[in-house]
Image 1: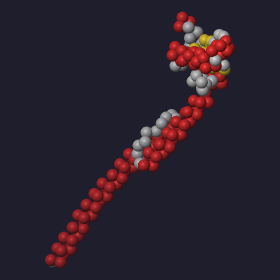
Image 2 (image 1 turned 180 degrees about the horizontal axis):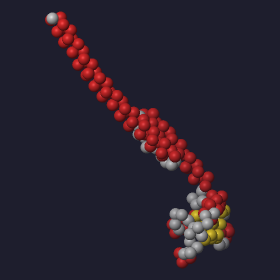
Image 3 (image 1 turned 180 degrees about the vertical axis):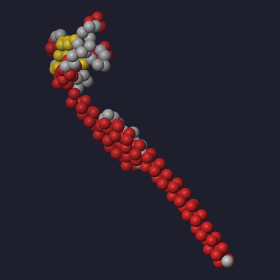
Image 4 (image 1 turned 30 degrees about the vertical axis):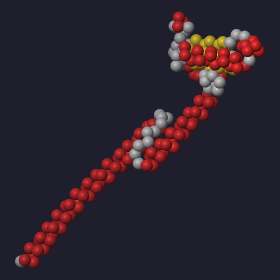
Length: 180
């Protein structure tokens, strides 16, 4: 009978140990699931959303995701800088001819938009260049570009067509000519 009690006690201890190990296993599975969600799944969802919107990635999650975000962000910034250089006049910072014309065409294609297109140049720029030098002429062009950027809305198209010729397109301004 003692032997039977000893085996019963041993079986009882084994069952208790098994219960403890099962609880430890459940806690470990929960912790691993938690880690997977916060270190992999959540950052992946955020990254995919930001990539679709072409936004920079916040370096979060596992090391690999932080590294991927760093590389991606460097590429996005480089691409934006390259695009900016390709679309803007290097001297003035306003849109170059091709980009300005494309943007105006895009805005004019909208049937609801009625804008105003203004083409102009700096009078007697040749005389300024001849009498005061090309630096003074460049300064006049830069001053005009700066004035245009400061006086018009962000949605207005300001472009340098070449030399001293500029384009200004004011979308949705046809009905509000007083603002001109």
